[in-house]
Amino acid sequence: MIRTAKKMKQRTSYLPISIGWVVKIAATAVGFYLWGWDFAWVVLGLVFGWRILKGIASCLVSLICLVGFFWFLFTHIF
Image 1 (cartoon, rainbow, N blue to C red):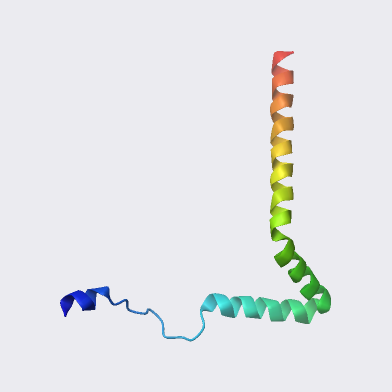
Image 2: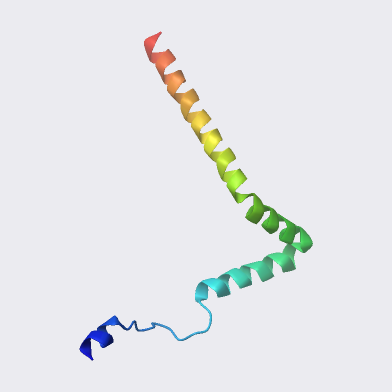
């Protein structure tokens, strides 16, 4: 009996929806109210293009680091 009581997890909240979902729904409603369908298209574009955007950002950061590294080498060696 004690062993089964330890294995049971107690729920911290009995709400049917979490606060994070409420914030997401409210932000979506406010964005749609302010910008209309343009907001919906931007959100859909970000959702579907997130991996591509992350890849492009990673590439740009790497390029900036390489340029900075070579600039540092050239200015301190020559």
